[in-house]
Structure formats: C-alpha cells, structure tokens
Length: 90
Figure 1 (cartoon, rainbow, N blue to C red):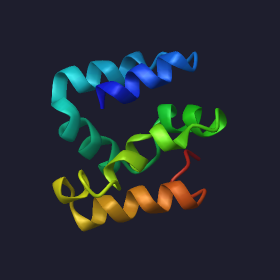
Figure 2 (cartoon, rainbow, N blue to C red):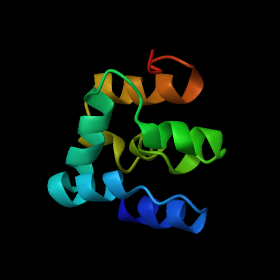
Figure 3 (tube, one colour):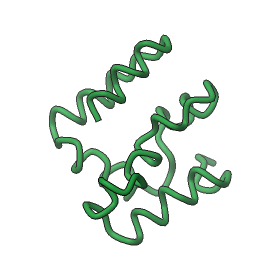
C-alpha cells in the first residue's frame, strides 16, 4: 500500500489522507475500511479521473497474493467499483 502512495505521487497526486490512514491502520486495515465504506473514496475518484485505477486499493486487493486477506464481500465490492459506476457519492 505504501508503494501505491509513492506511485500516485509520481503521477502528481499526493494522497495525504490515504497515507495517514495507512500509518494509523496499516495496509490491510486501511483497505478494509475503504472497502467497507458505502461510497468510493475521493482518492479512488481522483485515480479514476487520472486513468490510474490499476494502483487503487480496489485493484490491489484483487491481486491473488492479497485477496486471501479480505472477505468475499470486500472482494466483490472492489470488483464492482472497478467495473461500474456504483457506489459513487450522491
């Protein structure tokens, strides 16, 4: 997850709230919090606008090496957010 932060910075986006969440909750905890939220994060929307969803938390948790750390519901949420416009803020 820290590598994701660094990649975002290289693209000109500085997700300071994400970094603070990582420091507070750790990588898995931060990802679980984001996936359990009803709506996508502002960071997800920014990465989407920048065409960089491949470095989103949602994309990372779906990788085979990380998926076992998450519930099926969290994985489904990640998948749906990546393939649809669901869960956007009203």
